[in-house]
Amino acid sequence: MASLLLRVAQPSVSFTCRRTAHRTFSSAMAQRRIANPALFICDLQEKFRPAIYEFPKVVSTAQKLLKASKLLNIPVFATTQNRARLGETCPELKLDQPDGIKTVCHLDKTLFSMITPEVKQALDSLNASGPLSCIIVGIESHICVTQTTLDLLRSGHKVYVIADGVSSCNKEEVPVALARLRHEGAVVTTSESFMYEFVGDAGTPEFKEIIKVVKETSQSTKEAMQTLCKI
Image (cartoon, rainbow, N blue to C red; front, side, top):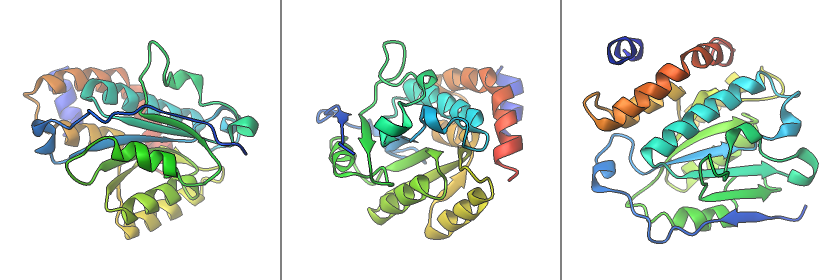
């Protein structure tokens, strides 16, 4: 269906959390199948680049979802793990850069889970009308992604783990982690499936913008799917 639409449409802890106390979700967004979305970018750091299986493809999927988030006004949360030792967030993601996307919270942590007290506070500041729909990309699938997902599920949120956007040092860890998270109640899906499900209607102005992202990233999406989703 997506391809058909495409053809037709053509350890000290430091953090920065931006308060968004006055931010509210629109009534139109509340009616979507995926309500109150938030994108989580988990520990995509320079030092992991040579160690993680198909790391560049994880980054390309994160870039695509960041573009979509900017168009769809989806808040973004990002973390680094022990930044002093493992480096900054990958620069090509352009988080909090003038030509990039502004995060709600960009936090350095020692916890494996992204859900630190500071992130919890920032989540509360969204003033969402109900549980969040949390979209997760990053590393490692069996450690930080897993523990973040479990914490969010425990808090009553819905979690979408993006299969073409997560990985680990040992690729064999990935399907085991995804199977476990699916069993725990997370939705394991793909980046393109998420974008189409979120928009939900080819007749909307948002779809016209999202289809441009789909076109621009068609080759990188194919490559990510052929590697990360065939593990």
